[in-house]
Amino acid sequence: MKSVPLQVVVVELEDGRRGAFFGPPMIIDESGEEELQVESIWFSDVSHLPDTISLAQLRQLALEKFTAEQQLRH
Image (tube, rainbow, N blue to C red; front, side, top):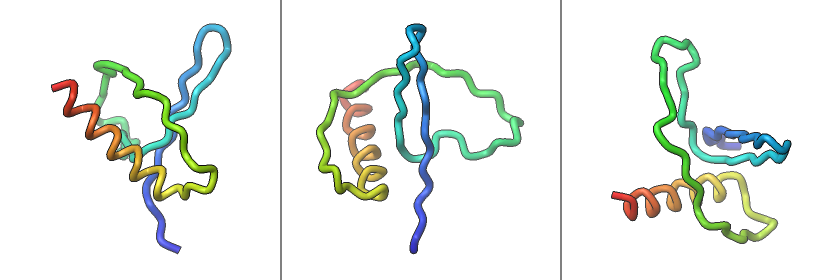
C-alpha cells in the first residue's frame, strides 16, 4: 500500500474542548535547528464529507481548500 505524509494538529481551548486538524505536514524536520513561530491561525468553513472518504482523499481535499482560501486572503 502506498503511504502519504499526514500531520495532525490538535488545538485545546481553555474550556477543555479539543479539535484535531489533519493535513499535509507543516513541520517535517524535528531536529529543532530552525525555530518557528506561528504567524496566524484561521479556520475554514465547516465541510461535510462522506463517511467513507479515504485518508488520501482527505489530505488532497485539505490541500485544495488551503490553496483556495490562501488565494482569497492575498
